[in-house]
Amino acid sequence: MKSNIKHIAIEAKDLSIGYASKKKTIVISEGINFSIKQGELIALVGTNGIGKSTLLRTLAGMQPLLEGTISINEKSVNDISVIQLANELSIVLTETPASQNLSVMELVSLGRHPYTNWIGSLSESDQEIINAAISATKIEDLLNYKCYELSDGQLQKVLIARALTQDTPLILLDEPTTHLDIFHRASVLKLLKKLASENGKTILFSTHEIDLAIQLSDKMMVMKEGNTFFDTPDNLINVGCFDDLFSEETIYFDKEKKRFILKE
Image (cartoon, rainbow, N blue to C red; front, side, top):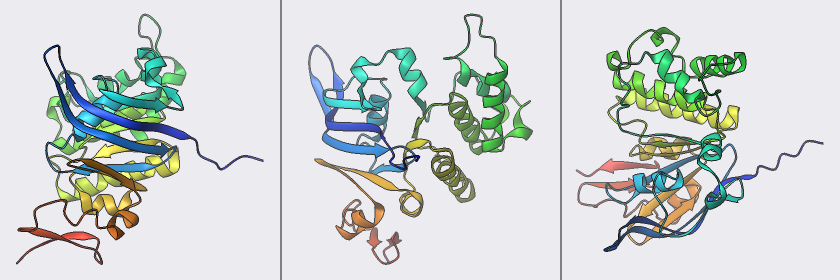
């Protein structure tokens, strides 16, 4: 009989993040603990400058952790090579890709780079994975465009397609809905939800769209000064986690409506 038990995709224990140099260490956040299962969609929220991007970059191995441990598939990141990590994890950042002159098809195909042979040739299997990513993100009509010709919303879907082409079980995204209108924000988040629930991808994304994240996420990570909370949206609401997330002078969190309301 096939087991329905989902394994732990990524876990952090007593994690401290920030920046270290020979002269000093700057701690952005510490005491971070979470355990994310396969196929879960997790929203990472908090005020500007609280450390969301730093956390994602640390989890992706783009900058060293200060203290604690990070495990991917129950294996310490310290024991995972760069090539192995590229097979386990892909990341979509807010920065505009340097390869703006590439066509959409070329950029999406770059996701297969960790798997191709020494001359970079794509196999039939590689092409099937690329086609599946294109279909999942519905960017068929964009393939011949140059990346600089795309709108922000179109480029975001292309970058997600590249991450899907990398075909990793874990995907990290840093504010994937930045600069998008409300329709495209909802569209991108619904796509992430579908990838997690139907494709079994484990997805952790930072966002300012807290109201939408509450509706769609399996769990949420809320970063505050001095503490990071991790639980289901309903449990976080019940313990008042969102009540003091922002200054109450302008907005407040309505627990019944599960969203922030503008004060009159």
